[in-house]
Length: 37
Image 1: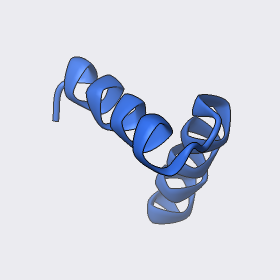
Image 2: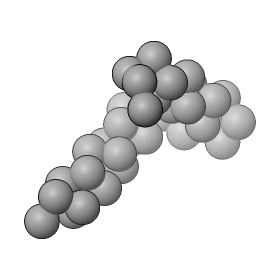
Image 3: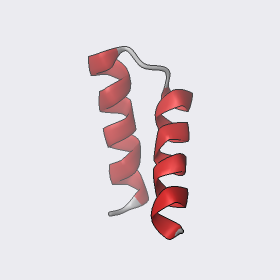
């Protein structure tokens, strides 16, 4: 997955669900950290 794809997905979640982009990024970060363990 490319970086620009992630940004588009985050933007779509932000618009569709009205969730702050920072919250979405934090969730992605936590998921990556969890998967790396």
